[in-house]
Length: 289
Ligand code: ATP
Ligand code: ZN
View 1 (cartoon, rainbow, N blue to C red):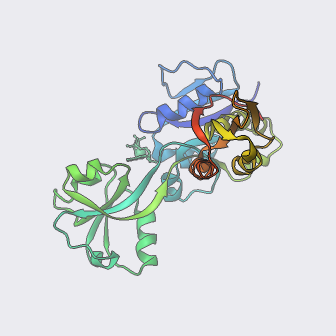
View 2 (view 1 turned 90 degrees about the vertical axis):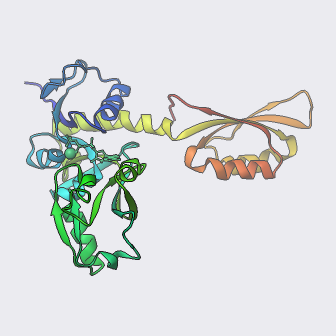
View 3 (view 1 turned 180 degrees about the horizontal axis):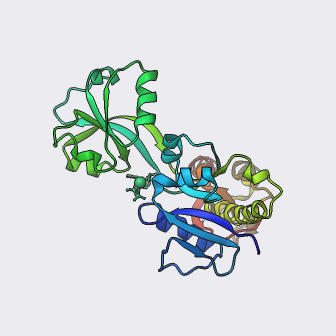
């Protein structure tokens, strides 16, 4: 029997489509519309295990699944013995304390003795303990934002990305206590095992890493006075020297290079300073080193 790597993915919700998109971009095909509990990929030795995101840390820790695509917030909250093996570029949010509009919030101390509703009691109680604030936690599994209006809490601690849900419920964000995004988790040490499954995982990660390498990069083209080429090369810091093409006007050249997206604005400002003109920035779809 050939080994198959089992991947836990949220069945429906904020992370499910983006997790599957990533797997699709890695060239793995599957019957995406069925979403039965377990499904084998068509052209790669992996199977998907579609579950609630809250349960993913437990399933991976127990070995029911080998890896999981899940929010770091769930990993932190569930206290399972897991290893985060990759950070993914989606699912960004923060766990925040929010209070009703008329609550006079000055600092965390304003919550002393108050009732705070949350689905994240472990993360919240650690944060309150660390800041020496004593509050009463009210555990709710979902719809945390309605608990103040419902009269069972004075404040809430919930996931926020844009803040729209808070506003719609008469709440304001008071303090962010934990920042999260989607990650891939495995049981501890799994990547280093000499097993067939670990080999499959390493192959999958290699594809995902290639995708994220291209994702973080932009292609820039600009015109530059010829005598500034050496300076431009230092600014863009290309692995190999940037491509330089002559222009009709001999005192100018056109320069092309790949630039890290995170670094783009620094590069842009410095190129402007040395006289670069007509800076053109383009997305890169796929890339090899
Ligand atoms: P399930 O039925 O799987 O338990 P859920 O309602 O708990 O679903 P979602 O609301 O789909 O889950 O959120 C899944 C994950 O998406 C969160 O744990 C978090 O990591 C991430 N996330 C990103 N932005 C937000 C947000 N604004 N609110 C809630 N979660 C967010
Ligand atoms: Zn959930």
